[in-house]
Length: 472
Image (tube, rainbow, N blue to C red; front, side):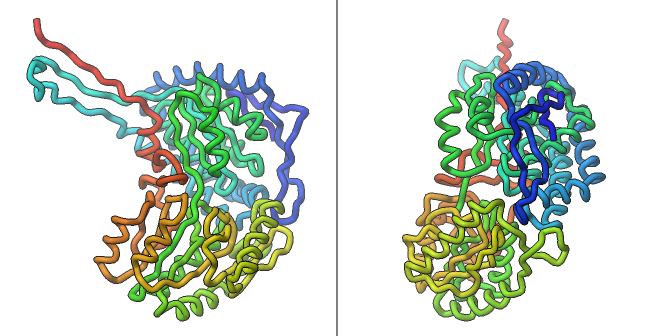
């Protein structure tokens, strides 16, 4: 498949192979963007940004709505491609494509609500004859750097708001699964996006992403990915706007009054959907000692029902992780936990990139699964006696994206809301839940800024203040 350079489909001799995570077969190849390709994309995007800024809102809305319609028309075809390149199940892939269509529709709606406010200058002595307001204008060129786990929807979370705000976009797709991003490029052009205003440059992050990030003509970088890569981007980004949605090690707390069945359901769906490759996957579970055994029994019973296998089969609940190196890493982290004293309740087996859903009990604090982001299908379940202890354990991480708390006590709920250091605190719901319109982002090393259509638009615009002096 060719890459998109300012509306022009380009191929190069140097290629990257896109492999099926399930069986290692070749899905397709994509070119590695050259320095000349990157320069052309950015220089044309400078013109594209001017076109987008002049474009009336109704036209941006039309492009976004048409993109949504075309995604819906092609969702089955795109979903199959998504399964092949990412390894998620066909049911998960179809849901992602339809979610992506909805994200563009929501972006179209929010484009109509970009507005400013009047400012009360006469509240200041000496400024009685001044009148003014502020408006929001596009930043210019937005670089969207997309992760491998939800490549289409998380691309839309960047591109939809960028277009709604009137920006040009340069997309750097994930190296492992860039194909559906390129299909999205086809759809954007068909929907009426100006050719100068959209490029999709494929290749390794070090050779393609870094030059884009460093370029002074790029006015904003929107990145989703790991903390180490995020820190590298921050060292290179210079003076421009940045939105970072980074890693997590999401905890879930179950008190003695929490609904166990509901908490187990949240743990299973949150810990094992997309093979645990979601930044808000449930990774650590803290359960009150009085209900610990009951919770574990229910959890293991539900985990046994998860069918692992061919992601193209509609009977499959969980497919492979993205590649064998990650599978080996996940396997080693599980082994480390067991070697240090954790009990393996279920799972822990690996067959190439398929890892059986794993539950570990009473896992030591100094293990990687308790301190780092696993990005795999394993959940650590530990017991606690005092609620305050559970809150402290939940906070004992460098991350702070989302956390779930199951309790029937309103005072515990509010104590959790006040004390937990996370961008999202969910009461009687797991941390895996996300509504695409809500502000989404984290504390500490989980990121900078917020996604969610309205909030991303705010990040992707500049405020211009206008003041009139009415004195003669």
